[in-house]
Amino acid sequence: MSAFYSWSRFALRTAAAATGIEGRPTKLIFIVTKRCYSRCVYCDIWKIKDTPGGLDGELSLDEVQAIAAANPYLQWIDFTGGEPTDRPDFPQVVQAFARACPDLLLVHFPTNGIATKRVEQMALEIQQTVRARLVVSVSIDGPPELNDRLRGVRNDFEHAVDTFAAVRRLLGPDNVFIGMTLHGHRASCGHTTSELIELTFAAINGALQARSEAAISWDEFHLNIPHLSQHYYGNTGNEAKDGFGGEAHRAEMMEALKLAASKSRRRFLSAMGAIERIYRVEAGRYLAAGRTSITCAALLSTVYLSEKGEVYPCTIWNRPLGNVRTTAFALMPIIEAARRDGVRRAVAEQKCPNCWTPCEAYPAIGASPVRSLLALSRS
Image (cartoon, rainbow, N blue to C red):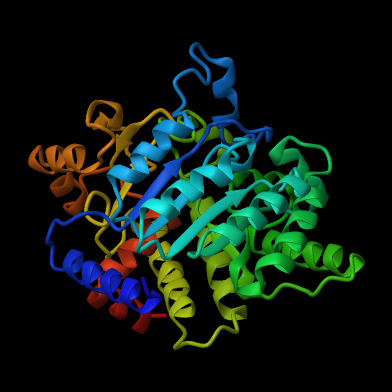
């Protein structure tokens, strides 16, 4: 099936979502595993292997293949974790959806970058066998010493830079990004958040130069707002430790986002440039008021699936809706029941926890063109 046809279908379905028509989602956020060898102080996903039940019940490859076959309409999938590449059959998981979903356009996965050779090999296998565009984001949360302390792994920064360089050589610079989350831990380092993003950016480029690799631009450097989620990150209760939500922290994040926007060189009219500008503008609104002007698309054009088959509205709202193991692996019976029960209406009316994570923000921007253009005009 041609890419033009697939993109046309995606545009039509996005337009339908913008009118409130409750069709099938275009995007799936799929937690392929909670396994992770990072020890991040602001995320407790890695602790799940030490809790009762542990990894028991993780979807098998056969079950993943059944999920893909039962939901062939998906066009955009975020395969996340944990660390997705810590699942040995991760390429086969992606391939299952690529075979079953003829309109699949975009595949994304984040990585901690610890195991460079494994991440590179899996990215290569996916690239060679999947027609959809593959995008990879590598997590780096500060200059070397701070990053390694926050992520709990010795030499994590060096490994992550190695992984970024290797995967960028493989996929090209438009498909590989650095992701930095603006946690409040940075305040303990004697630097403002804006100073830390500049130090981090400089440290990454210094490390790339030492490897004879091309420098990154600010357009390859994405800033995330921290969030709390019981069912995903398992980090509720970390508010005081993280400084999350404090007035000073919010103000510093807003300044950091403005700084990054001022340094961006991406053309205003490019699609990704416009989306990133809107993301930053609305991130500032979220930090100032706790909500954005753009309506979330959860349970409209996006849905979240856990590693054990449980469906939630999104990465943040801890409201289990049902398990695909009880619906012959189909998502729509669960989504339709949630819509009947008013869960989608609660999201639209912002009666959910409210968030502005990229997982939810980017599809929300696409499903709210008028409000997004208004936000862009304010940037």
